[in-house]
Length: 316
Image (tube, rainbow, N blue to C red; front, side, top):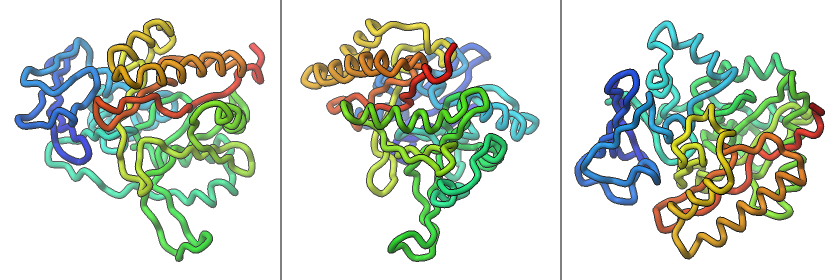
């Protein structure tokens, strides 16, 4: 299979699987240096080969858990269930500035909108939210708690007219039967984090079961602005190995990818994340929950805090 790779809507590279164990990213001619796909793969003439089914930057947004199960059920019989095949389905709706699609495919098909106001007031039980996830299964958001990207539908809110506004401003998360009220847990933990660090804004539903998180990779109009890479991708790790690293390795990645004049600020941010994680007893802190964002190599910075919660509420 061969896919086209886009940065801010401009095709910059092709992605292909050479065999079951190697994938290749090849930049097109005359691509600008700032239109790199990953901090780990600058623009160059030679292709970037990776000894895995996908490069880490592409593995980063592949779905996990329930969403992966839904995608395999819906699309597996038609296209197969390999990572490359799944990427061809979710690649147009991912976090960050890159999109992946089959050659010639329409890049910006409107996704099914979500009435965010109704979501915050309605039934978000595990069963109801599972059905909502099924309706929006082609969003590329990783994680084992059911969640997806929305294209916000606002109807009759405040000064807005009765109309549908298609944006890409939120990530919507549900709760889990194994972790009751994990959305409320995250909302409260994020409020604590916001006292000491830039933190993604969250809003909790009335029943405490659904969380609406403002995306921090888009501009005020909901258009992709920032590239984003978590430290799983930056360290060349599979998402399944997200716990198998150290803060020392993360600090080395900061040294490798963050400009010297920004390095101290990023290191201070990450050091505060470590202390916050300890204070909140966030046993789920791993390499996918800390990340860098950028518009070029000159402005790489730490992302606002996200996915912060306390595991102390659930005992052992």
